[in-house]
Image (cartoon, rainbow, N blue to C red; front, side, top):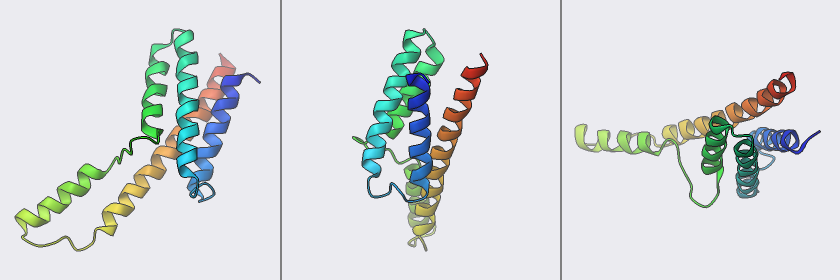
Length: 127
């Protein structure tokens, strides 16, 4: 098994296991390892002159990096808050709803990326 497939399997396994709370305590480490893994995959795709894969892996590396925390759903959270404050002149009833939606999106991104990595392994096997 070559290094690219090994890295993809490790990344997919880590991201799937982080859904079950196994890596919750060391999620920063998972994100750092994901950053390194996706940068490695981007470099390998760049060496093969595959610009689309290079761009995708760099975007995933930026998404999973642990230096700056990107919250995918923060814009929605802020919009709901200002909608309640300015148009309804009251506080939102429950901010846990937006936190739960943010968690669902985070989990969905991990699942989609993991499935994409696994599919790319099988796709490269057939080519």
